[in-house]
Structure formats: C-alpha cells, structure tokens
Image (cartoon, rainbow, N blue to C red):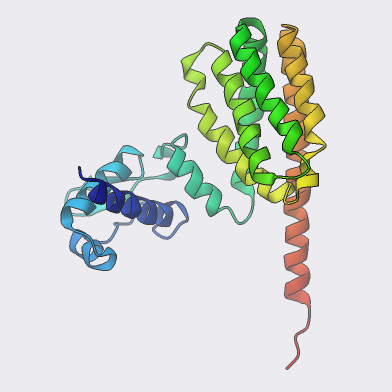
Length: 249
C-alpha cells in the first residue's frame, strides 16, 4: 500500500471509528454505504474497503447479509486496541470511561508491580529508575514531558513482569494516564505530589519486595482515583452552576 493511500485509510479509520465509539452510529445500525463514504470523505473505494477491514479487526463492525455493514455491540469491541482506547477517551464527557480505566488499572498494576519486584533485571530496574528521574525533573515545569515519563515508568514495569500478556495493558495505561492527567494535573505544579508516590513503588522494586511494590502501586492508583473523582465532580458542579445562572435578555 502506498504511503498516501495508507494515510488516507488511517484518516477514514479515525473519522469513522471515532464516530462509532462516540455514539454517532448506534450498535446494530448500518454505517453509510460505500459510495456515500467515498463521496463524503473524498477517497476511493479501495481506501474505504481497507478502512472497513481495519475497523472490523478492531471488533467495531461486521457485514450482515441484506443489512450491509453494521456496528457490533459494545461488548464485542476490542477495548484494548490503542485506537479504541483513544476514541473512547476523547468522547468521555462524563468521565465514566476514565473511572473504568482506573478501575482496570487497580486490578492489574499492583500484581504487575509485585511480579516485577520478583523478576526485574538490573537493566529493567535502571530503565524504571530513569523514567522516575525524568518525572522528578519535569514535575514542576513541563506537563507533556512529565506525562511521557509517567507512561514510560508504568510501561517499563509491565515489561519487567516478564509476561508478554501484560504488554497490551500498556495501551490502557497510556490512555488512562493521558486522560487523567489532563483532568487532574493541568498545570505543572499539580504533578509534584505524585512523584514521591512513584518513588515508593520504585524503592520496593529495587529492594525486590513484592508485597511492598503491590501496596505502593495500589496506594498510588487509589490516590489517582480520588483526584479523578474530585475533578469530575468539580467540572459537573461548574457546568450545573453555568446552566442555572440567569442570562441577560
């Protein structure tokens, strides 16, 4: 596939996939016909067909006799797919998807931290430590750099479990961190309190203390969940105040 066609295909996938995930097309409903999508998006039938194959691989759509291509039930979607995670995060106005992501992390990451404390090599521990050092360096001055280091910290722990089935969870962690930090840590100083919480995890890993690593990770995630809930409630209260404020005229 040529680079230009690949780019067009990716654009169609993101446009149509984002529309499906955000509720623009309900499960059980058919997506627009091929010629309609070609005309609307200004691409060839080949591009549309490739995009549809990609969306089908993500579990979002399927072909049905006499009905065309329909949106599959939400439970059939590949919720660990990076694009699906990203689309859901962008359309998460209520914050409920972010809360679910955090719940998932609470169920998985403490166990992963305990396994990493038992199994991590010296090189893997060094990489986790380097990620923490970057978090510490950027916490008060660079939100984007802090986010990248935070994602790296958690991803390296997943890798250090030595279990390849943890790798896809890194997609969930990255999307969750990006969404949550944009809700709770909009300003660089907001990131500073989380640095010592991550350091506790790091110290437990370096000391090869599985239960301490488990508990430190769980404590950190519970703290994040509380901050997320407070931020969501604050936004909801602000929106309610805005709606109830009388307007001139």
